[in-house]
Amino acid sequence: MKRVLSFCWLFFFLAIIFAPMTDAVFSLGLDKTLDTEKRKLAEKPIYQLDSIATFPSQFNNYFNDHFPFRRLLIQIHSMWSAGMFKVSAVPDVVLGEEGWLYLMGAKYGNSLEDYKGTEELSELKLENIRLNLERKKRILDSLGIRFVVLIAPDKHSIYPEYVPKNIKRRGTFPSRMDQVVKYLKEHSTVSLLDIRETLREKKLASRWPSFMKTDSHWNDYGGFVAYQALMKALSMAPYGEQDFTWEQVPGTGGDLAGELSLSGATLEPNRVLCQPIQLPVLERKEIPNDYGLELQDKKRVWLWPEGKLQKLLFFHDSFGDALLKFLPYHFKETIAINTYQFSPVICTKEKPDVVIFEMVERWVEGIDTGDFKKLETTSNSLNP
Image (cartoon, rainbow, N blue to C red; front, side, top):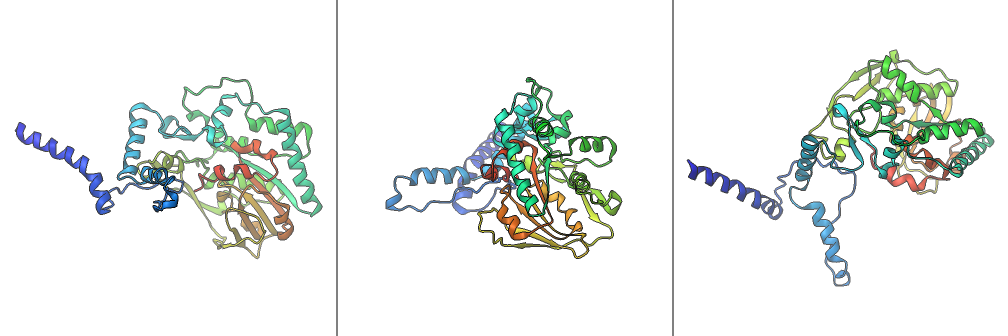
């Protein structure tokens, strides 16, 4: 019996040793683990005499991204870290209570320090935010265009109760969002649409959660609450919950689970989806932009002849996608551009009735810059 057991262990270790080599040589594709990385992996370099100096480092990067069973090993490491030690394998993702995940790293707006109360915005930063918003409003006012700025809250602003207990407030400063809102109230006629309190109230009163547990974004219901607030800010009557069917549909883990390589092994219970009851599902078209600017995406266009206003121009990040299930029903034409690069060139060419600018809370201090280019790469890396 011991001899048989010894052979079994020998076979097991030989399989572990030779499986990666066999997979690499014969391209068997044995690793079926879901690829959840949000970046482009290194491509295999071509050896040439004129690139002999850089070839070793390029090939090393390629091998690090493509060695056999890499995805499976990353997933095992994440599962081991989270399950055994309650530690996140990714510094920017925080493991919360009851399976909640939070995006709170320095790479994504330094939300962790903001949550701890250690981030103070300077007077110069706040003043530049005011000046930049007022400049945008003056431009749009001169064109006869209404302007609304919506800040989509970070998840921990609405569901702080699941943030790990070892993360505590140490500083005395309010959140950066609170600092910006307070400064604009005291020094400007321009304001941000702050829906945090509305979402907190809905959290207590509604049967639907507004944020997902394993994703950095809100779900359709969170987007719906924001949509209603936007319509009221524009003095327009929004549709009600009764105009849509709502369903909580659990599915695979969201983008934060993906960052941990656990989206296939994790359940997302807070995925709330909706469909209009009497309104049609509008068709979306993607059209190349002709603005002469380096924008990341094509513009997306919705047409609805029964809209009360002629045209909406919507600058947004990934939080805006949920809003676009509702906004197009109020405009004959809705143009959405997934970018922070607010440009008078676009407004002049499109001639909208309304411009809505949406930005997630963790980047709120970036409103002091003119075109937000410095935020583009990072802010879109967690798009759905």
